[in-house]
Length: 102
Image: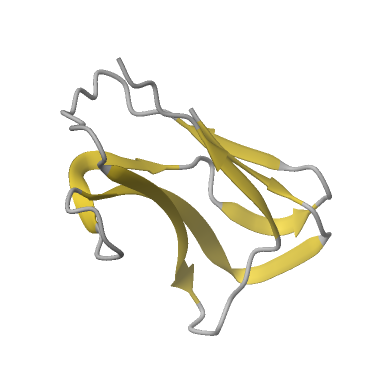
């Protein structure tokens, strides 16, 4: 499960802000990470309008099975995309994600 929680009041006018989490890996290991196919989730619903402190968006990617070899490094990256009025947009908050390794 992946979540985003706003830590500041936001008023998002004219756009929908969609938050996506993508899991990356470095198998070498080094600081070069590549996205893991299928290991992404779009948090729902999009942010729009008046967003209060503590507003939560979440998502889950069920049934994902990937091989993680010893010393593989994992990195979860959160990004936002917007639809509507074209403008620079930020979403203040914190994000978390969980990965089960068997």
